[in-house]
Length: 204
Length: 218
Image (cartoon, rainbow over all chains, first blue to last red; front, top):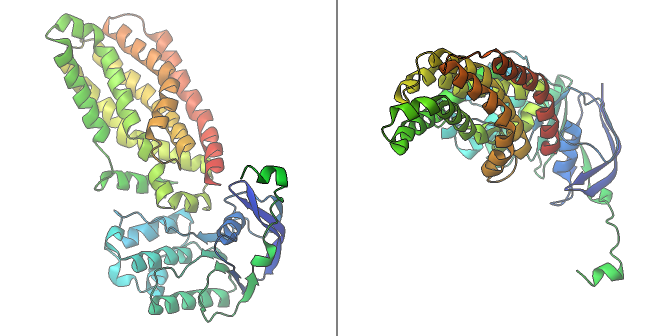
């Protein structure tokens, strides 16, 4: 089942930012969103993940199939790395955490409190969370922030393995990951703001 | 759901989790009252049920601003909202975890602190019963307030202003049960009212909390 977005319009803070976005991500496919800061990448991803309603348009094939990785990783600093992951595995009713720990080289840090991890290690923990959700569509918002080159390779490897198993991925990123993916440039979909007329302009 | 409850309990017991904060506050308030009232054991006996209830209520209030705000700050609330758990059960479990870490210790500590306030002997049972029946409502109403103010910087004061008026019915009937019990009077009517408020609040408010949380997460 593929994820299809049809004529989607999204708003941030009450103002429309993107209009008429349409794309399809088939199983095993990946889509990379690009665009300048503020164009609405995060807003679009949050809408696809179901965290906010769309102004118009439809998202099909997303219901209960999306694992969302936001800017912040949702890590509890007083729990250990393993405890953090086990919690999410239990919430999503998925299996063990060993594959996720191995994929991001977190096994040696297993029992360390997550609060004692470096920024990059936290990010790796946050990304490894998606592997324990058993959800087919992975949605990433700037996944490579604070990752070094090796960690980016780990991430790309994990996504590639996921795609090979028939999963799908949507990500907003500016880094070349070496993943075969379609690229969607969002700038052309920028919503036209209502023109400010001369009367209003005199008050600006 | 059990995973979420266990996580919240574990977080509360770990460093900086805030377990015992409410209990310590309750202890201090009830110790301060005899100091401020002076050595009049007769007067203390009269006001003891009310003081115990007010102290428990304020102690509950103290830990509310951490209830959802911490999960909001580190992003786990967004992630939980996309998890298979419905938001209604998430807020219910969070309220339950809050009660287990805040309300329940207060209930258990109340008879001990009753001694400090020279509570009349028949009152001990009724203070415990009324708190056991009433504090779950405080946690559930508090979760609603926390959901309303989640995402606001320094939302703690606003949270108190929103939640305290909602606590009034529980306080009135809870303290009434304790007062009547201490004086050896009939307690059935206020007891039923208190239980009714708690049952109604537990049944209805999680839906309201989940609805405002959905709006606030946008």
